[in-house]
Image 1: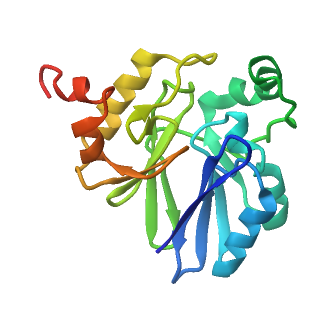
Image 2: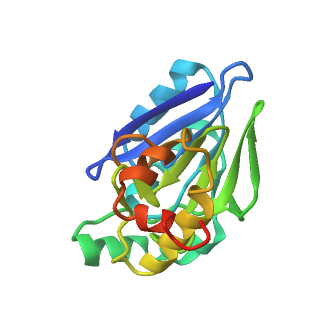
Length: 215
């Protein structure tokens, strides 16, 4: 299995490579910046990029999409509820963060909840997890999950952005992530990896969800 992650860009958003080494195919997940570095990392595996898959469309996760797409010929996939986030990306970056970013990339495919994304013999299931962003998704594999900005080690994604909702975010975590086995490794959009069990025990946002009636 190919599994490599590294932070890119001024906001240090994590970009991941995930794939089947035997099949020579991989996904590039959340290429937020530094396209040359991402393409070089892909090149070390000698693998074909089957697709560029994004957990959501905020600027710090998509700025390298077009350059990676041109370099590899791979399509760009993202959840259909991110349409407005992509359309408004440069304006919101300017207003909220005071920075200029290029136009957001146009998707080649809109993802939907339940889609099964295959790369060689491996698969990731798309689970819609709104809250940080309307079309945020987690990509769930075998004992691993790419959780974007839904869940962090010891925290959760911010919900003070347009289209965000803390209630929706916590519901997404309770509905999609907490049912996963404790040893599921979570690869977040920022910061270090963690596990469902660690967050269940110590994350101040997650612990109250565990104690909800019926859980």
